[in-house]
Length: 253
Image (cartoon, rainbow, N blue to C red; front, side, top):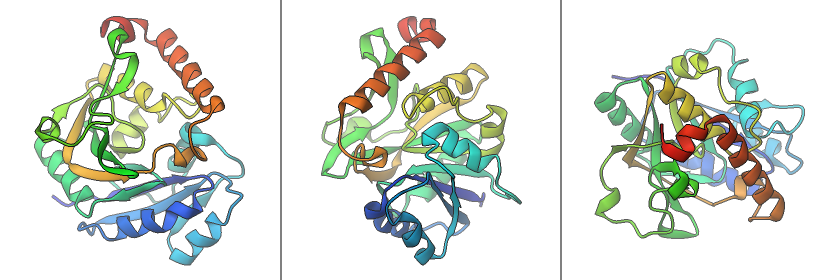
């Protein structure tokens, strides 16, 4: 099995991270892939750096943020012969076996699913940031398994999970189009949870793939460290999720 993977990296003012991100993708052990950088009208030297790499890029006329940034790019790709989209933040460093591990996941669980990786905090490399997602009233509505914990055998097996973080999300081209992409009513947070809930509602399951690994400079893809404005956007997105899926988030129904 040798499916075509289209790696799509969303970037906004992430020039300082692009070298590590792109080089780590290029150093992966899987050959049947393409890379496209989607730039959300960066004002730093991101485009100059992307052009130096000589890879495909899409330059948006303004900052479409996460949901529309991906939707506008994916729905307008011409001559797209890929089988899967691998969506990545710009502030990540991939393990060289990342794509091969997802291919193994496809072999194990089939194509009708969404897959996520084991994600470590790049500033605390032995600390997990994401090892699956959970939602519900007693999980503060939306949270990560393993967050801030040291890696241990508890997270060394694949398992079905409630949602996959948009930091690293593998989905078939067919399913992305079937779901009509991300809901653009969400503004940088919650798009991934919403996509996964809609997917599960039509029989597309979500899986955490433990051998697929990368390191994430947390929050850098949104322009820096945590801030009041970002927390406000998070709460707004959470409120939208609660309004849209009250039974799912309160009772997991």
